[in-house]
Image (cartoon, rainbow, N blue to C red; front, side, top):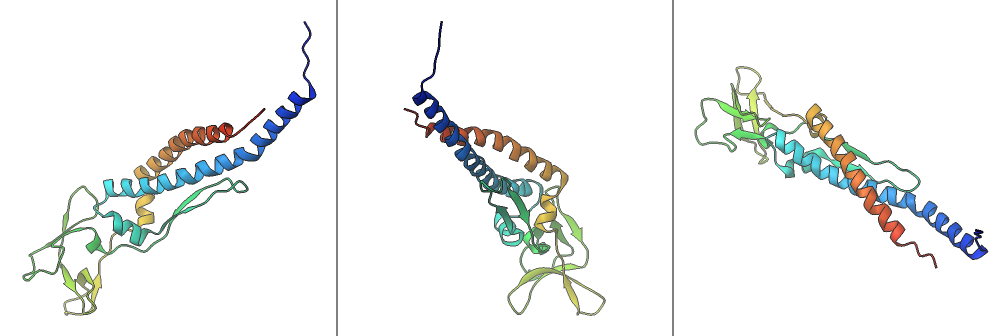
Length: 190
């Protein structure tokens, strides 16, 4: 038995290999970018499972960004920068300035339940800003606003960070198969 390959078949195989070498990095970067957006959404979801905070406040104060990957730079970074979040943005009782102040204000940062904060009160400033405040001494002023943790701190909590890492790996495996299949589906060898 004798097998031989003609020059046309060799040329087609070479074109196919060049096509794959050129387009597979694009598939990897596309997969990374899709995974990044999904993990960003998952980060907000996981934070809300652990903390008594709304999605809009995570977006407003968290500044969660996904750096885009490209064929030259095959990495995706999920970063968050932001200040501590005013305590009023978490679950507080009362949540608005009451006509008659309660004996003790209760606040819940984590979903484990609220706890009393002696001496704290909800007030509206002249600018219209509503917050949870506490006097610094016995006099009426000065007062200071109370804050909860920042979004980067919430994202870095061990349970949340581990979940996000696992979720990114799981999504990357699934997404990479899809993107590579898409690239190979465009390969036309005649």
